[in-house]
Amino acid sequence: MLKKIPHLLMITAFLIMSLFSANAPKTKTHGAPSSTLTKQEEKEPGITRTYYTDNNGNLTYANNLRYAVYIKIYDENEKLIKEEYYDENGSPSEQGAGYVATTRTYYPDGKLELLTYLGKDNQPVKITSGYAYLQRTYDENTETDWYLDTSMSPVKTTSGYYAYRKTYDENKKLIVMEYLDKEGTIMNNVNGIAIQKRAYDTNGRLATEFYFDKEHNPTIGTYGQYGVAYEYNDAGKTTKTTYLDPSGIPIPTNRGFTILRKIYNEDGSYTEYYYDANDKPIALSRGQYGSRTVNGQIIYVDARGKEIFDLHNYLNYNHQSVMFLGLLILTVSTIFGKVPNIFMFLLYASFIAYMTLLYREVGENRLNFTLFWSYRQYFTSPSLRVEVMNNIWLFVPAGFIIGRITKKPCTILICLIMSIAIEATQYFLGIGLCELDDIFGNTLGGMVGYLICDLSAKPFRSLLFKHTNIKP
Image (cartoon, rainbow, N blue to C red; front, top):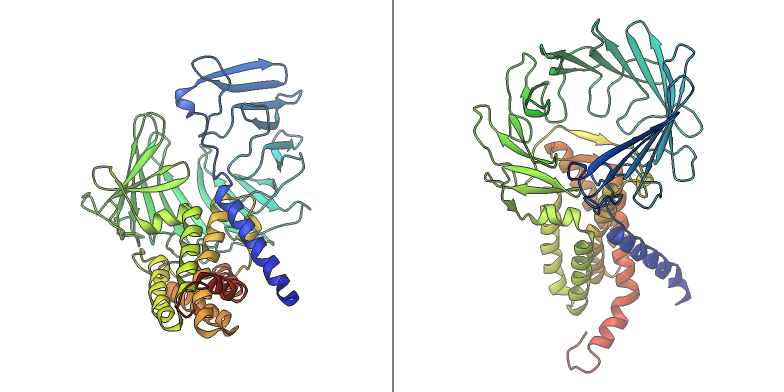
């Protein structure tokens, strides 16, 4: 029994992390949208305070901005040197990228030199994009942003590049963007794009954008497009996005739509709707004609804007339900013997296929062999935290059921092979990101399931059937 204590500790730690993921707030959902609050500003030498109040004059958290109070501090030359964010209780309020404040230093000519992101301890913190400092250098008509870690060493961002060079025209409009490696050489980012070129309309708004690889050849973006065209409403908000081929002709994306339209609400939120090249509504792979984001969760809607329930989408955002479903399957599997568990495994394997392979839009073949990239952001990115735990839990029942059938550690190897097969299928069919983190998480889940089976199945089943004539 003593030999199994490490297994018990591992399972306990896993369950604690699962409960943390299930109960940790994804975003602050209290407060109200800034559009429904009163914005007030106080100025004094060197400091500007912006804050939001409700109808009763009470300081209120603006949940779309992620703060109630925003403080800007200036030096004697009126240069912004620090930004701070606070909630309605006066506590530092973490922004979406994982920082609560920023500081800035400048060159003698007044141009920005260094932007530093700070955590709650007022020390440099690596934000979700993978860096803690942004150092800017200048040349004629160009700016280059270099990304540094907490030790101020060059670091690759989560988008796959070390620096970002911007070229401006005579009107100070950004016309060319280039992604660079450590040496400052043009490189492809994780999406295969090295260069982006922009053009503007007569109102100075971005009109089109096209993508190129490091050899300056046209290349595709995330949705399989070579370029994008934008249209705006009177308020300057994007209302129509059209996806283009290299010559600027509208083409269907790998998700199935050619045009994306946005309908805005009074609070500034919006619903996206999908259209074909003829501007007719089109349904995507899960039957949705559009989507909106509510408290960080994507909600599918029909052509009239009515919410559509989708099990896959629901489980992606509700880790509590994933845990409950997993534990329920473990309990049912414990009741059954070997033959029924074989059928359970086939059913659950079909469920895994539904969650990972079926009803997914075809896209580009993408690989990510950076191990533990998502785990390193476990405590800073709520969405990645849930995704990591869901990937693990997806294979916990599989490991448990296979363990009930084989009663051997080869269960873990079987789960590893299943995960590799899924990731390979996603890559070759272009229906997802093939990454080592998913394989690791799935295999870890299979191992946890097998350990639970090995530790608890026999005593639980003995207790369950103690007063029955059914053989366990």
